Image 1 (tube, rainbow, N blue to C red):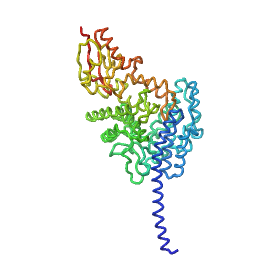
Image 2 (image 1 turned 45 degrees about the horizontal axis):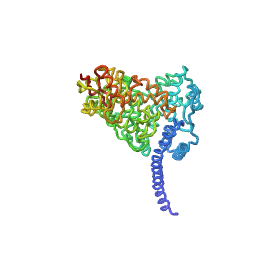
Image 3 (image 1 turned 135 degrees about the horizontal axis):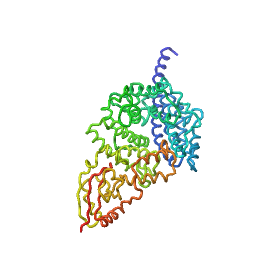
Image 4 (image 1 turned 180 degrees about the vertical axis):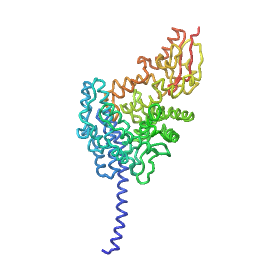
Length: 534
């Protein structure tokens, strides 16, 4: 063979091999995207059937990590194994029915890997260990509290020793800070695994300790990696350094938690939160009621609504202008409509992480309870902080003389389209009495959004009746603890059909009854004092 032919063949191979490899990887990435959507559906199904699924999402991220680092065959094999496992249930662990909290603790303690100390399959990469381990530990801690015990793990958290030095931490974060173009197009990237914001929980439980130098290195890394153009944090494309998809709301929220406390104050004088104007504008632009038909996108949307609300209303609210607060209010109203019309399961009184699901689950319910708590759905004080005093939203008050309370007498509430539900009272309530003083709830027209009084009762009923013990990250105990922080509600409230009859009875017994119309944010909009006509 002549030298020219050899050179020609070499040039062809240099072009053809990378091209063929690129086409192969592109085809595999697209196939993964479509199969991953089905895998998320299977995970939701198996979770509802009582299987242990807490590692599923982290395994998906671990597979993406391997693929992005060039381990194509290993990632492909792992995904096929995971997909088939959830397709057939072969190898899945079904969560048993527990006689008591001690038995449940024994079950979950037995899931810890003795070599790594993680509650995660040790054949997956190190970055996948932190998240599921924290989730199971949180569940175990709630169980331990209910039994009066101190939480003691069976094995030390050895995997943390691989990143508990400042130099190891920087290498860990740098490794996750960039991604290839194929993986960047997926709904989630392994970058989300770079968030270590819950390390303090391990210290509080005396399960692991980090040095002051390590904590400062973490804060510095977060502070330095904020994008000045958007105010967000996110993974960057490995070849160009460009911020992928405009940033990541999930990691952005968690990084802000590390830099700011619950009151919106900076934790570190030397690492103050920067670029807040751009950060707020970007956050407002991510609030959208539009939901994708894609299951993995719905999963991301559900989580992002919760985190966006937490970031905006918890950490950034003092920095918002009046116009930005009005925009946030309207966006929240629109998102509430979507949440209740697509993710709420009225027959069960709880939520699912995916749209239009037949059954509620722990992950979806805890996610949306968290969202509703942040926007003030269950807290008078929270509503006052975000949406103002009742006097500022109660636009119409009037007194009407009537002989009875029926649908006809409630027609004046139709004048305000914002009125979603009507509560009846014996006397005009003060700001703290809008919930505690309510006698009953009536809906003047069909609506997807329940009144906070009805929803609180439904959620408490569901959590005490469900057989679900733990989802991918939420647990029955953690959700119960969340619900206990809500304003107390009378569980004996009448339903909407009986509300009018009770209001009519009170009118005739005491000569008057108060009706107040509330919007979907649970703020009072209109009040009518009905007096009995002599």
